[in-house]
Length: 344
Image (tube, rainbow, N blue to C red; front, side, top):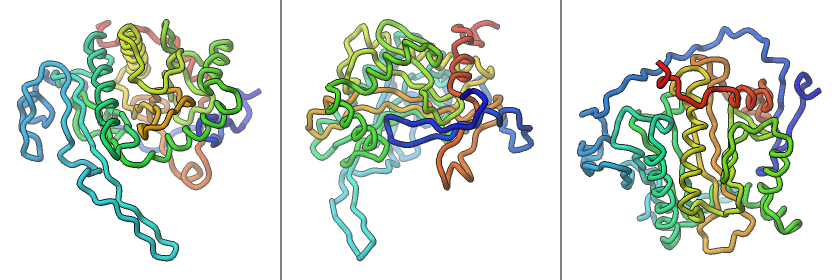
């Protein structure tokens, strides 16, 4: 019934709802058509701000790095030098926010993306994420560390070099704040991880599973908003990425590569997305309720040139999707594990 009837689905992590309208997949499209991004890039671009040894827009030079490389963003949205000040004027309230923004270069090779990188190289990215989570989280006044990647021009990425970002700040942002609340309520009532119980139910069903290995599962969440949204969940109840052992780092790298390869294979294009890791705050509290996970929000809907826009009803009411999560999972699951560029 849910595959043909409009219905709402509940997001257990945020206490929010999404409208699913599967009958709308047949509607014609006469809207905006995107251009396919250029896939052929050089291994080194002398004009790239992120390539090894190059001068950045802020005037600093990159190290001549041969693996991963991180640095404080020259134009960061947050600054540690900010003085904490509360401002209240009747109903108007504001507070200054301290923080650090860093850029994480995944590889010195300008031409690569995560699905085209070797497993060992992605492991190095995972290790750097762990290190940055620990080091930034240990700084006094830093209470949340948000690791994320914007891939592709459609996601507003200003540089095609393989890289991500980390924003570390004094307060817990809205999305992880909602997830902290929901997971804490469940843990206090059941003495178990919300996502571990959810994962157990998803594995029993199997209809929204995309990929799995010994340590991780990639699935389309029951409440997914974006057409081909996915989530990677560790089987173990780990509050943050820092808990991963060496073998689990490789498992994480493998499932990231496998999932992003399927994304690229879907429309035979370097698939754009925003991906982020949600994990326990670094506020010094014991967050037993937290079960870290990595979400991918890709905008493409019907082809490499048609994207989903969040407008109208989605902006003023609540999120809405056409393709059911089950259909999206089946499509991704049935795609080849070999990257389409490797089959030519």
